Image 1 (cartoon, rainbow, N blue to C red):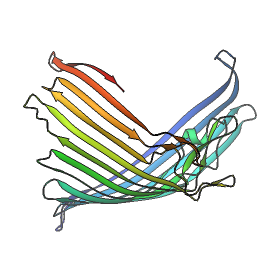
Image 2 (image 1 turned 180 degrees about the horizontal axis):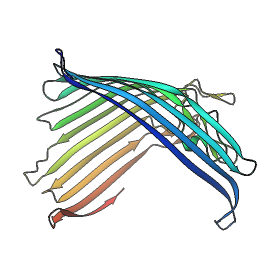
Image 3 (image 1 turned 120 degrees about the vertical axis):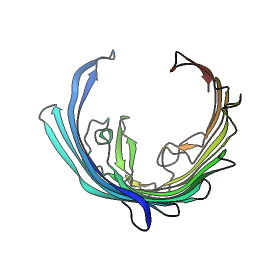
Length: 316
């Protein structure tokens, strides 16, 4: 469609429905690694659907607007076939309305800034409602949240220097986290609220030219700062509010150099740094930070028209 103020746009409608049956059998171990008698035999059926609409509009001056929304539905049916008697449970999740709005402004050259707001939900997966404790969680709630982000991207120096920067604030409610019982089996609980704020940046510099012997020469680096915290998280009278989110590194850095000679010889060097990671909700145990360096070299050639052969070796 077009009007006097716009360059053009489109409206998209759609929907999806999924019906999935998953049988789950758990057996005793005969001591030699072979299945013996059946402990439990379950059948979980999931029914999920969504309908959505989205409008994309381009205005004069390089302004792009995207607005949309979806409605999501989910139901789990649990049937314990063995041992007798059979037990059946049904878990219906309320329909969720999820809106989204995004704005992007292009400037002269190759630069753009953008902002977006979105609201959505993530229902518990099959492995979360039927964990290794051999039970069905009929009280686990779907995660829901909203995300606000701002960013800029573009290129300089005749598009040889590229950059991408995003700042976001993601608020998640009913966050699903993993727990472990005394027997070592995993199960999942809702952790109240979490605040996930962060910055992601990427910069790359490309000096390669396919018309010269140095067909590829690219330096790149990316950085992520992740300020993730529990909010209002109390489990068994233990208050973890304010603690760092389990399993998330506060900072991650990656960088590398890619070199290609005459499109045949290619070498890649990468460096990855991962900060210390909290291993439990109480933040009393951490995995140490580490640096991983990788080197990969290869040779490739074309033969028989569209076929290619590549030989490479690498080490971390």
